[in-house]
Image (cartoon, rainbow, N blue to C red; front, side, top):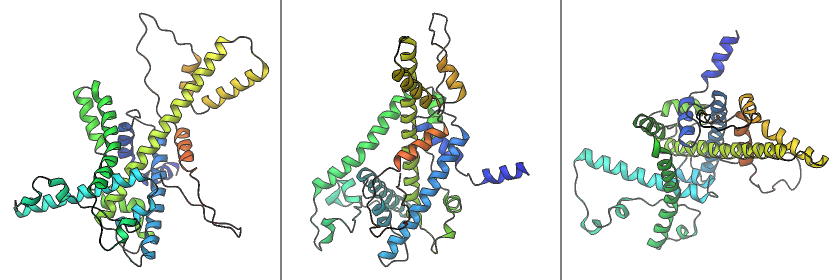
Length: 336
Protein backbone atom coordinates (compact mmCIF):
# COMPACT_ATOMS: atom_id res chain seq x y z
CA UNK A 1 0.00 0.00 0.00
CA UNK A 2 2.81 2.38 0.89
CA UNK A 3 4.68 1.54 -2.31
CA UNK A 4 1.60 2.20 -4.40
CA UNK A 5 1.03 5.52 -2.67
CA UNK A 6 4.68 6.49 -3.18
CA UNK A 7 4.49 5.47 -6.86
CA UNK A 8 1.37 7.58 -7.35
CA UNK A 9 3.03 10.53 -5.65
CA UNK A 10 6.09 10.36 -7.88
CA UNK A 11 4.00 9.88 -11.04
CA UNK A 12 2.94 13.54 -11.08
CA UNK A 13 6.55 14.70 -11.30
CA UNK A 14 7.36 14.59 -15.01
CA UNK A 15 10.21 17.08 -15.29
CA UNK A 16 12.70 15.92 -12.66
CA UNK A 17 15.42 15.26 -15.23
CA UNK A 18 14.92 18.58 -17.02
CA UNK A 19 14.93 20.56 -13.76
CA UNK A 20 18.10 18.81 -12.58
CA UNK A 21 19.80 19.72 -15.85
CA UNK A 22 18.68 23.35 -15.58
CA UNK A 23 19.87 23.58 -11.98
CA UNK A 24 23.26 22.20 -12.98
CA UNK A 25 23.59 24.87 -15.67
CA UNK A 26 22.68 27.61 -13.18
CA UNK A 27 25.41 26.60 -10.72
CA UNK A 28 24.05 23.67 -8.72
CA UNK A 29 25.87 20.35 -8.33
CA UNK A 30 25.50 17.78 -11.07
CA UNK A 31 23.11 15.57 -9.05
CA UNK A 32 20.68 17.71 -7.03
CA UNK A 33 18.58 16.16 -4.30
CA UNK A 34 15.32 14.59 -5.52
CA UNK A 35 13.24 16.31 -2.86
CA UNK A 36 14.67 19.70 -3.85
CA UNK A 37 13.90 19.03 -7.51
CA UNK A 38 10.36 17.96 -6.72
CA UNK A 39 9.79 21.09 -4.63
CA UNK A 40 10.94 23.30 -7.53
CA UNK A 41 8.62 21.42 -9.89
CA UNK A 42 5.68 21.99 -7.52
CA UNK A 43 6.47 25.71 -7.37
CA UNK A 44 6.82 26.01 -11.15
CA UNK A 45 3.56 24.12 -11.74
CA UNK A 46 1.65 26.39 -9.38
CA UNK A 47 3.17 29.44 -11.07
CA UNK A 48 2.22 28.16 -14.53
CA UNK A 49 -1.37 27.54 -13.49
CA UNK A 50 -1.58 31.01 -11.93
CA UNK A 51 -0.16 32.63 -15.07
CA UNK A 52 -2.55 30.79 -17.39
CA UNK A 53 -5.61 31.64 -15.28
CA UNK A 54 -4.68 35.33 -15.07
CA UNK A 55 -3.83 35.48 -18.78
CA UNK A 56 -7.21 33.96 -19.63
CA UNK A 57 -8.90 36.60 -17.46
CA UNK A 58 -6.89 39.30 -19.23
CA UNK A 59 -8.02 37.95 -22.62
CA UNK A 60 -11.65 38.10 -21.50
CA UNK A 61 -11.18 41.74 -20.55
CA UNK A 62 -10.02 42.36 -24.11
CA UNK A 63 -13.16 40.66 -25.37
CA UNK A 64 -11.35 37.66 -26.83
CA UNK A 65 -11.75 33.95 -26.19
CA UNK A 66 -8.16 33.18 -27.13
CA UNK A 67 -5.04 34.23 -25.29
CA UNK A 68 -2.30 36.16 -27.04
CA UNK A 69 1.33 36.96 -26.29
CA UNK A 70 0.29 40.41 -25.05
CA UNK A 71 -1.69 38.85 -22.19
CA UNK A 72 1.40 37.12 -20.80
CA UNK A 73 3.67 40.10 -21.36
CA UNK A 74 1.16 42.28 -19.52
CA UNK A 75 1.45 40.06 -16.44
CA UNK A 76 5.24 40.46 -16.28
CA UNK A 77 5.34 44.08 -17.49
CA UNK A 78 6.97 45.26 -14.25
CA UNK A 79 10.07 43.13 -14.95
CA UNK A 80 11.46 45.11 -17.89
CA UNK A 81 14.48 42.85 -18.42
CA UNK A 82 12.32 39.74 -18.69
CA UNK A 83 9.87 41.52 -21.02
CA UNK A 84 12.68 42.60 -23.35
CA UNK A 85 14.18 39.12 -23.40
CA UNK A 86 10.78 37.57 -24.14
CA UNK A 87 10.16 40.02 -26.98
CA UNK A 88 13.59 39.28 -28.37
CA UNK A 89 12.91 35.55 -28.09
CA UNK A 90 9.59 35.83 -29.92
CA UNK A 91 11.09 38.05 -32.63
CA UNK A 92 13.90 35.64 -33.42
CA UNK A 93 11.48 32.72 -33.26
CA UNK A 94 9.45 34.39 -36.00
CA UNK A 95 12.62 34.95 -38.02
CA UNK A 96 13.58 31.27 -37.78
CA UNK A 97 10.07 30.28 -38.82
CA UNK A 98 10.19 32.47 -41.92
CA UNK A 99 13.65 31.21 -42.88
CA UNK A 100 12.47 27.63 -42.54
CA UNK A 101 9.43 28.31 -44.71
CA UNK A 102 11.63 30.01 -47.31
CA UNK A 103 14.01 27.05 -47.39
CA UNK A 104 11.12 24.62 -47.85
CA UNK A 105 9.67 26.61 -50.74
CA UNK A 106 13.10 27.25 -52.28
CA UNK A 107 12.61 31.03 -52.40
CA UNK A 108 16.00 32.75 -52.19
CA UNK A 109 14.86 36.22 -53.21
CA UNK A 110 16.19 38.98 -50.92
CA UNK A 111 15.04 42.56 -51.00
CA UNK A 112 17.90 44.71 -52.30
CA UNK A 113 16.73 47.73 -50.31
CA UNK A 114 17.30 45.86 -47.03
CA UNK A 115 20.23 43.72 -48.11
CA UNK A 116 22.65 45.61 -45.88
CA UNK A 117 20.37 45.23 -42.82
CA UNK A 118 18.99 41.70 -42.89
CA UNK A 119 18.26 41.50 -39.17
CA UNK A 120 16.42 44.81 -39.04
CA UNK A 121 14.42 43.90 -42.16
CA UNK A 122 13.33 40.43 -41.04
CA UNK A 123 12.80 40.83 -37.31
CA UNK A 124 9.24 41.55 -36.27
CA UNK A 125 8.70 44.18 -33.61
CA UNK A 126 6.05 43.24 -31.06
CA UNK A 127 3.78 46.18 -30.29
CA UNK A 128 2.13 46.33 -26.89
CA UNK A 129 -1.21 48.08 -26.66
CA UNK A 130 -0.54 49.73 -23.28
CA UNK A 131 2.60 51.50 -24.47
CA UNK A 132 2.11 55.19 -25.19
CA UNK A 133 3.82 55.18 -28.59
CA UNK A 134 1.49 52.45 -29.89
CA UNK A 135 -1.68 54.36 -28.98
CA UNK A 136 -1.35 56.66 -32.00
CA UNK A 137 -2.52 55.74 -35.46
CA UNK A 138 0.72 56.94 -37.07
CA UNK A 139 3.55 55.41 -35.12
CA UNK A 140 6.93 57.12 -35.24
CA UNK A 141 9.68 54.66 -35.99
CA UNK A 142 12.65 55.30 -33.73
CA UNK A 143 15.60 53.12 -34.56
CA UNK A 144 17.55 54.36 -31.53
CA UNK A 145 14.91 53.03 -29.13
CA UNK A 146 14.89 49.69 -30.93
CA UNK A 147 18.67 49.49 -30.71
CA UNK A 148 18.60 50.35 -26.99
CA UNK A 149 15.96 47.71 -26.26
CA UNK A 150 17.95 45.12 -28.18
CA UNK A 151 21.10 45.91 -26.20
CA UNK A 152 19.20 45.74 -22.90
CA UNK A 153 17.70 42.41 -23.87
CA UNK A 154 21.08 40.99 -24.80
CA UNK A 155 22.91 42.21 -21.69
CA UNK A 156 21.53 39.46 -19.46
CA UNK A 157 22.15 36.85 -22.16
CA UNK A 158 25.76 38.01 -22.50
CA UNK A 159 26.22 37.76 -18.74
CA UNK A 160 24.95 34.19 -18.77
CA UNK A 161 27.26 33.35 -21.66
CA UNK A 162 30.25 34.79 -19.76
CA UNK A 163 29.31 32.74 -16.69
CA UNK A 164 28.97 29.61 -18.82
CA UNK A 165 32.35 30.28 -20.42
CA UNK A 166 33.93 30.63 -16.99
CA UNK A 167 32.34 27.38 -15.80
CA UNK A 168 33.33 25.35 -18.87
CA UNK A 169 36.87 26.71 -19.07
CA UNK A 170 38.38 23.75 -17.17
CA UNK A 171 35.96 21.04 -18.27
CA UNK A 172 36.99 17.94 -20.13
CA UNK A 173 35.47 16.99 -23.45
CA UNK A 174 32.91 14.62 -21.91
CA UNK A 175 31.97 17.13 -19.21
CA UNK A 176 31.47 19.85 -21.80
CA UNK A 177 29.25 17.59 -23.92
CA UNK A 178 27.10 16.84 -20.88
CA UNK A 179 26.95 20.53 -19.96
CA UNK A 180 25.87 21.42 -23.51
CA UNK A 181 23.09 18.84 -23.37
CA UNK A 182 21.91 20.24 -20.04
CA UNK A 183 21.75 23.75 -21.52
CA UNK A 184 19.15 22.50 -24.01
CA UNK A 185 16.75 21.32 -21.31
CA UNK A 186 13.23 22.65 -21.74
CA UNK A 187 9.73 22.11 -20.43
CA UNK A 188 8.06 22.48 -23.82
CA UNK A 189 10.46 21.74 -26.69
CA UNK A 190 8.91 18.73 -28.43
CA UNK A 191 6.91 18.06 -25.23
CA UNK A 192 3.70 19.99 -25.84
CA UNK A 193 1.36 17.14 -24.93
CA UNK A 194 3.30 16.29 -21.77
CA UNK A 195 3.31 19.94 -20.74
CA UNK A 196 -0.47 20.24 -21.21
CA UNK A 197 -1.08 17.12 -19.14
CA UNK A 198 1.41 18.25 -16.50
CA UNK A 199 -0.29 21.64 -16.08
CA UNK A 200 -3.76 20.03 -16.26
CA UNK A 201 -4.95 22.74 -18.66
CA UNK A 202 -8.17 20.96 -19.57
CA UNK A 203 -9.45 21.48 -15.99
CA UNK A 204 -9.60 25.29 -16.22
CA UNK A 205 -9.38 26.13 -19.94
CA UNK A 206 -12.08 25.75 -22.57
CA UNK A 207 -9.76 26.41 -25.50
CA UNK A 208 -6.54 24.76 -26.59
CA UNK A 209 -3.38 26.85 -26.39
CA UNK A 210 -1.47 27.29 -29.62
CA UNK A 211 2.22 26.58 -30.07
CA UNK A 212 3.25 30.22 -29.57
CA UNK A 213 1.67 30.33 -26.10
CA UNK A 214 3.32 27.02 -25.20
CA UNK A 215 6.69 28.45 -26.24
CA UNK A 216 6.09 31.52 -24.07
CA UNK A 217 5.29 29.30 -21.09
CA UNK A 218 8.43 27.30 -21.80
CA UNK A 219 10.47 30.50 -21.71
CA UNK A 220 8.85 31.59 -18.43
CA UNK A 221 9.38 28.19 -16.77
CA UNK A 222 13.06 28.34 -17.71
CA UNK A 223 13.29 31.77 -16.07
CA UNK A 224 11.53 30.48 -12.94
CA UNK A 225 13.98 27.63 -12.43
CA UNK A 226 16.85 30.05 -13.06
CA UNK A 227 15.71 32.59 -10.48
CA UNK A 228 14.85 29.96 -7.86
CA UNK A 229 18.19 28.19 -8.23
CA UNK A 230 20.30 31.35 -8.22
CA UNK A 231 18.43 32.77 -5.20
CA UNK A 232 18.73 29.49 -3.28
CA UNK A 233 22.46 29.29 -4.03
CA UNK A 234 22.95 32.83 -2.76
CA UNK A 235 21.09 31.98 0.46
CA UNK A 236 23.19 28.85 0.92
CA UNK A 237 26.43 30.82 0.46
CA UNK A 238 25.31 33.43 2.98
CA UNK A 239 24.38 30.77 5.54
CA UNK A 240 27.66 28.91 5.06
CA UNK A 241 29.64 32.12 5.45
CA UNK A 242 27.69 33.06 8.59
CA UNK A 243 28.35 29.62 10.08
CA UNK A 244 32.09 29.84 9.34
CA UNK A 245 32.30 33.34 10.82
CA UNK A 246 30.50 32.14 13.92
CA UNK A 247 32.91 29.24 14.38
CA UNK A 248 35.88 31.57 13.92
CA UNK A 249 34.53 33.93 16.57
CA UNK A 250 33.87 31.01 18.91
CA UNK A 251 37.37 29.60 18.55
CA UNK A 252 39.22 32.92 18.63
CA UNK A 253 37.50 34.64 21.57
CA UNK A 254 37.60 32.55 24.76
CA UNK A 255 36.26 35.32 26.96
CA UNK A 256 33.00 36.89 25.85
CA UNK A 257 30.14 38.63 27.46
CA UNK A 258 26.81 36.91 27.97
CA UNK A 259 25.01 38.90 25.28
CA UNK A 260 27.72 38.20 22.70
CA UNK A 261 27.72 34.51 23.52
CA UNK A 262 23.94 34.32 23.17
CA UNK A 263 24.07 36.14 19.83
CA UNK A 264 26.78 33.84 18.46
CA UNK A 265 24.92 30.76 19.65
CA UNK A 266 21.70 31.90 17.99
CA UNK A 267 23.50 32.70 14.74
CA UNK A 268 25.19 29.30 14.72
CA UNK A 269 21.88 27.56 15.34
CA UNK A 270 20.21 29.51 12.55
CA UNK A 271 23.02 28.79 10.11
CA UNK A 272 23.28 25.07 10.87
CA UNK A 273 19.52 24.52 10.93
CA UNK A 274 19.49 24.46 7.16
CA UNK A 275 22.55 22.25 6.71
CA UNK A 276 22.53 18.49 6.50
CA UNK A 277 24.13 16.37 9.25
CA UNK A 278 27.18 15.71 7.05
CA UNK A 279 27.70 19.44 6.56
CA UNK A 280 27.37 20.09 10.29
CA UNK A 281 29.94 17.39 11.04
CA UNK A 282 32.33 18.80 8.43
CA UNK A 283 31.98 22.34 9.80
CA UNK A 284 32.50 21.24 13.41
CA UNK A 285 35.89 19.72 12.55
CA UNK A 286 38.81 22.13 12.15
CA UNK A 287 40.18 22.42 8.65
CA UNK A 288 43.71 20.94 8.55
CA UNK A 289 45.72 21.43 5.36
CA UNK A 290 49.07 19.69 4.98
CA UNK A 291 51.33 18.44 2.23
CA UNK A 292 49.61 15.05 2.10
CA UNK A 293 46.06 16.28 2.60
CA UNK A 294 43.46 14.96 0.21
CA UNK A 295 41.46 17.04 -2.22
CA UNK A 296 38.80 19.38 -0.80
CA UNK A 297 35.36 17.92 -0.29
CA UNK A 298 32.80 18.41 -3.03
CA UNK A 299 30.12 21.04 -2.77
CA UNK A 300 26.97 20.00 -0.99
CA UNK A 301 23.67 20.20 -2.90
CA UNK A 302 20.87 22.60 -2.18
CA UNK A 303 18.51 21.61 0.61
CA UNK A 304 14.75 21.99 0.65
CA UNK A 305 15.04 24.81 3.18
CA UNK A 306 17.15 26.86 0.78
CA UNK A 307 14.53 26.68 -1.96
CA UNK A 308 11.73 27.44 0.49
CA UNK A 309 13.54 30.53 1.74
CA UNK A 310 14.26 31.65 -1.83
CA UNK A 311 10.59 31.32 -2.76
CA UNK A 312 9.58 33.20 0.39
CA UNK A 313 11.87 36.10 -0.45
CA UNK A 314 10.62 36.21 -4.04
CA UNK A 315 7.04 36.47 -2.73
CA UNK A 316 7.76 39.56 -0.63
CA UNK A 317 7.03 41.99 -3.48
CA UNK A 318 4.82 44.87 -2.26
CA UNK A 319 1.24 44.74 -3.49
CA UNK A 320 -1.35 47.53 -3.59
CA UNK A 321 -4.10 47.72 -1.00
CA UNK A 322 -7.47 47.21 -2.64
CA UNK A 323 -9.76 46.03 0.15
CA UNK A 324 -10.45 49.43 1.73
CA UNK A 325 -13.75 48.13 3.14
CA UNK A 326 -12.04 45.31 4.98
CA UNK A 327 -12.83 41.63 4.78
CA UNK A 328 -11.01 38.72 3.19
CA UNK A 329 -9.40 39.01 -0.22
CA UNK A 330 -7.70 36.50 -2.44
CA UNK A 331 -3.94 36.46 -1.89
CA UNK A 332 -2.13 37.19 -5.10
CA UNK A 333 0.95 35.15 -5.90
CA UNK A 334 3.96 37.10 -7.12
CA UNK A 335 5.38 35.71 -10.33
CA UNK A 336 8.96 34.52 -10.24
